[in-house]
Length: 214
Image (cartoon, rainbow, N blue to C red):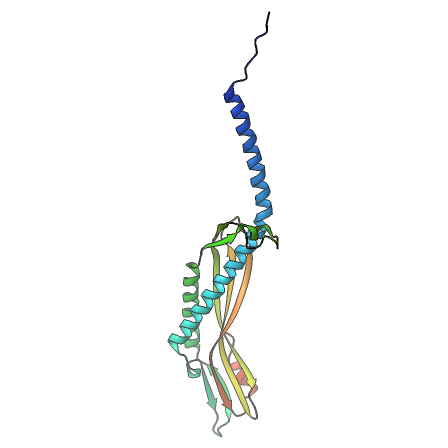
């Protein structure tokens, strides 16, 4: 008697092939993720830093231009009866106002600074030969930023019996990834000149303590 051939159902063949392809796809995806994630994180950090720096520079420059502060807004030089400098006192109210307004404005703009960046896939491989090549993929850049503003004071010699008093705003921004797929944390600092004045006469040491760092 002839044995009848058992035909393997076609749907089972299709199912086996589909499962095999799925496994290969998963393995490839896991390998790709491990290879690309560090480079993608570095690119995301770089782009976040650029965006943050640009936002802070533009915001601070616009604020300074709009308000047009002068030295007398922040400090008062006090002279004694003989006309000599006795102290340099800070105008606390104005200093606190500038720090608060500038910090609020910067943080408000930083909250809106997220977006997307297109990066060639070759740049994500870390290869110098492939950098900038290949089709572009979109990376979502949503940094969690927090900026603080501190006004600082510097006294430096400006020549014979003259002292230059500079008042500047020091902005420090902390940048962290708000997406779990990109893990990074960095910090950037800026200093913007608000006002300066040349004080004629010897500035006593006690005047340096009359101005504290705000």
